[in-house]
Length: 326
Ligand code: UT7
Image (cartoon, rainbow, N blue to C red; front, side, top):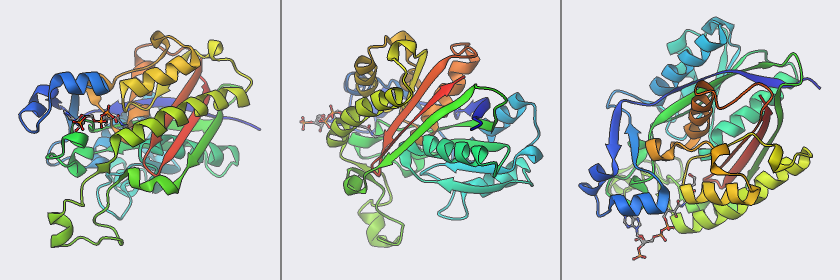
């Protein structure tokens, strides 16, 4: 079966920088605590005018230009986000309008921090089955808009940004080797945004109870994340008869340096072969992997033929991976 291939990447982060010391002035926290527990030093914050589709637009323009195509060439847009412009229409439709991608269909994927890899899984399947020929896959988050800036257990973690890729059929053995998606809805309570949907429709009460913001049981999530990701990366390599020594680059979801380190240790790969940028951007949920991928591409950390492993974990709970021969 033919493979699909990521032919180009793009990324965008908003200009506004919020440092740990800025947060010290807002909640009872410290640069020392945030750095030690997470590795994060600063994060980007979308402006008042910027919604998820605006960030997605900036990242997509770069990916489209780098692919040497025009927006009209795209036949499908998939946006992974949990902070879309509105509950509906989809952020993909807003993005389509901004790009002028008039020949595309568009929809969103909600798989929290695993969203980009879920979207890549879908794109890979659509290309392999010949249903689509050129797909724009985006992870975009304006998490600052759904973050409780009075809750120190969550507000120090998240940031805004977007990453985009163009996926096309591969002419050879380069491309996406395998994708793996998983979820366990029994653990939905560990991370969620409870207000504003049909369970708790927006009301004065939901606002007063701050239900329109992200809630997370951080420590419980942390433990499940470490265990699950260790199993996931080992299984992804095993299923493809690949040894971790053959892996050129690991691009993990950027949630916590301690989680990234644990996964790298399990694979016995040094941090030089791991892309880490959470110190600059924090956890940008669905955007973190495509941003890290783009940065690795433009800084020449990826060469043609390299084996690259992408992996993520998030609310749902969901977890996912993708193995790529670049
Ligand atoms: O993105 C997808 C999924 N998300 C994740 O993967 C996130 C997973 N979780 C984590 O990254 C970590 O659990 C956190 C960084 C969120 C928290 O680190 P932790 O080592 O698990 O800390 P903890 O929640 O057990 O809290 C330890 C202490 C508590 O105080 P006590 O009860 O020991 O007195 C917290 O109240 O740290 C306190 N604390 C803080 N202190 C200063 C919690 N948040 C803060 C803060 N500043 N911002």
